[in-house]
Length: 495
Ligand SMILES: [Zn+2]
Image (cartoon, rainbow, N blue to C red; front, side, top):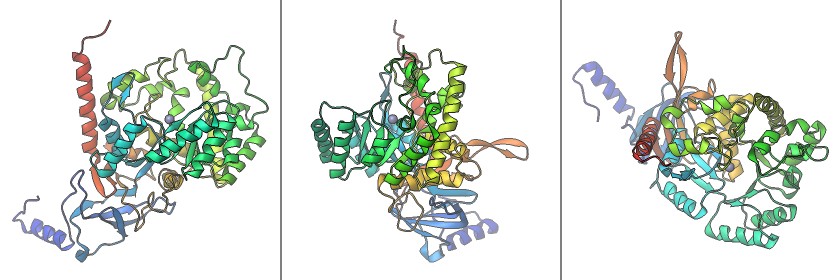
C-alpha cells in the first residue's frame, strides 16, 4: 500500500491517480480481474508498426482493449508502461523439458523461470519424458507451477515397421499430445507416421538426419514444419555429400565438422526449387540458428556473461566437451572448422531469407540445454540471428510471436496483441525494435550520455492473464544456482 502524504502536491497526485482509476501494482503469480498497462508503446506482433503511447486493458485471461482507458473502466491492477514496450508473449518453438543434465538433478523451476523471465509464454516441447511432461503441462496451465504453456510433441524415431509407427502415434494421441516430432526416418516409416498424425489432426515437425529422405519428402508429405536445417541442403545436392573415407556418422566430431561443409555443396538452382516446394506445401521452418553457433565461434559460446550467476552446475557439466553428452563435440575444434561453419551460416541464412521472401513461414526455437545454450537466453539470441539473416527487428518479433502461434495451429487466439486474444504479453524495459538485446532477462548496457548504463530486461511477463515479475524470477534462478553450487562444494569429490 502506498502511504498517503500530507504534502498537497503528493495529495493531488494521488487524487489524480485515483481519479484515473489507478490500482495496485500486480502481485507476482496472481491473476487480477482487470489489469491495465498504462501509457505504453505496443507492438502487435503481426508486422504492424508500433503504436502508442496508449493503454492495454486485460480482463481475466483476455486482452480486452488497446487504447485510452477511462476512469470508469477502473482496473484493480496497474502497470506503469511509461518508456516501456508491450509485445505478445514470445513463443519458443523448440524446447525440451529437462530435469537433469549429465546425470545431475536440476529443478524444473530453473528452466521454467528462465523461460518466463525471457518473456516466453508458450513453449513447444519437442521431446522429453512424455508422462512427466504431461503433468508439467497441466501444472503450468493451472498456474500451480510458474511457467509458460507447454505444447507437447513427443519424439518419434524409427520403429521396426510402419504399423509400429502408427501404433505409437495412436497411443500418444489418446494420452493427449499436441503434435508429433519425427526424427531421422526411412521413407516408408516417415510416410506412415505423417499419415497417421494427419488422421488424428496432429501437426508434425521433423529433425532430419543425413539419410534417404530430404526436404523433398517433407514437402511431398506435407509436414507442418521442419526443425534446424538438415534435409534442406541435402535436397539440393548433386548426388550425395562428399565425406572423407574414414567418416563415421556416429562420431559427433565427424558429424558436426562435416555438417559445417554441407551448405556449400548445395546446388543453388536445386536449392531454390526445394524452397519453392516447401513454401507451396505450407511447410514452416524453425531454423534454430542459435544452437549451432558454438561451431562458428566457440569462445563466444563458452564465455557468455550470464553464465557467472545463472548457469546451473548440471548444465555446466553437460556442456563440457565429452562425446557422451549430445552436442558436446568440441574436442580439437579448429579455426578451420569455424571458418567453414561461418560460410555454412551465410548460405543457410540466405536460404532462410529467400524462403520467407517466397512466402514461407519462419518461426523461432532455441533447443536450449545443449551446446552452451541456456533456456530463454537462447531464444533471444535466436532472434538476433534472424536479424543477422536479413530480417528487420519488426519481422523478427513476428517470427517469435504470430508465426509461432500459426505453426502451433492457435493463431486465431494467441501470438498477437489484439482484443479477444489470450493475455500472453511481455512488458519490456526499452524498445526491442531498436535493440533486441533489451529482451535478455539480464538486460543490456545502453548509452546514457556517453556512459554505459544497465537497462532493458522483461519487467513483467503476463501469461494467460497472470503477471510474473521478471527480476523476481531471475532472483529465484540465482538462488537455485547458488544452492546447487553450494551442494557441490559440500559433497565429497569422487575419485
Ligand atoms: Zn531439440
